[in-house]
Image (cartoon, rainbow, N blue to C red):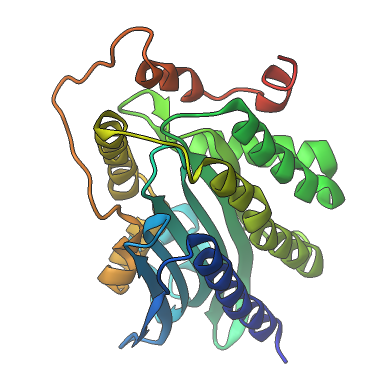
Length: 305
């Protein structure tokens, strides 16, 4: 079995495990699968859960796609890859809960190879997970980041966590809004120091996602809410759309490389609204969110309260 096949097998299993866990947590409906092929090479399976007991929409996608030419946005940063063929495999998910007190979340783990004359000329791992609350709870933010720090421990400990937390804060920044997409987490890309070690870290991130997220779902799933909270959730989902369509590199690469549009855009929420000039009432629960939309040392700042 090749190294690429090992990664692929792990990722198909990860998709299966995450979908099973989300179905159990939802307790309402099951995922439907849309298997697809890509004309230029490869394919995938997109799984969608809609109108469940907990999740308004959950998308968990696996893809193994290839091409003979990288898009200009990829070769501009890495000119040595001009003329290379490529193959990319990954699992990506976005979960949009019904209850505004449960955060939206995203996770992704992926592996990329560039080839010339059948030989690998570059490879790397990437991935991470981030949390987007609408009504944040300090204990949830602490749990999320403590889980992230713990899984980093065998791979450089505090230094790895600090570096990939910072990368997440920097990446998930809506520059035109001057705010982060949420409270961050971990993000890494172009990890190619040692295959076995880097693959182990990717597995730790992929496997750690459920440990980070599901306890938050269980704590918040029965929190009462009304139309005010629902409308604020829909408004803040607009920020999610803005980031994914303007800044997200995975979305842009997928669209520019001729990827499957439906699968690429499964991350978008099923319902969303925009409102011109919206300003939350001072001192309200909605206004409180602004405190959480700036990079912070959450473990020290909240843990010391």
